[in-house]
Length: 195
Image 1 (cartoon, rainbow, N blue to C red):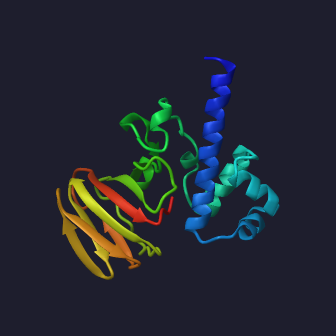
Image 2: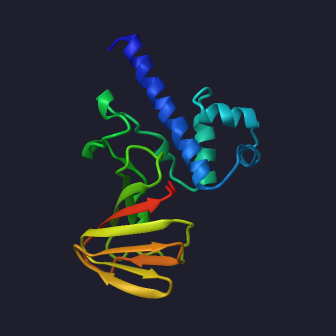
């Protein structure tokens, strides 16, 4: 590979990283000033990171991940080998993983990036996994159970779903669990993006 091609790929990765950080900040309703204060950095530096003019160090990426409550792995694996597919297509072998098997939930980003008005995830819930503490986000969410048994509590009411079932809710408290002996796979759509 030529030096020019390598430089171009690095520039594309830097732009995608910058866009992800900006999308996360906006999804959380935070200003550049708030981010700078929380990170102990200048507003100018944060702005340059969001525009791809400054590249955050690994330590900075850890701080961003902690601040946004996302896994640091979200900021990596932007590799898209075919330029025409960048921002449009996500190949099965190139999805960004957003969880660990230890948590009982592994998610893969099906959307090409964090821009846009929604994100799509493939969520795999391990047998017996559950979200014990109620969550609530300022989002509209929908899901489709691709396989397994999945239970979701929305606004205090539990719903047992199986393969082919779907759900939707907006801004309501929710919890989930997989009561089955097999993994439950749910295609989950969230608007606006939260990762």
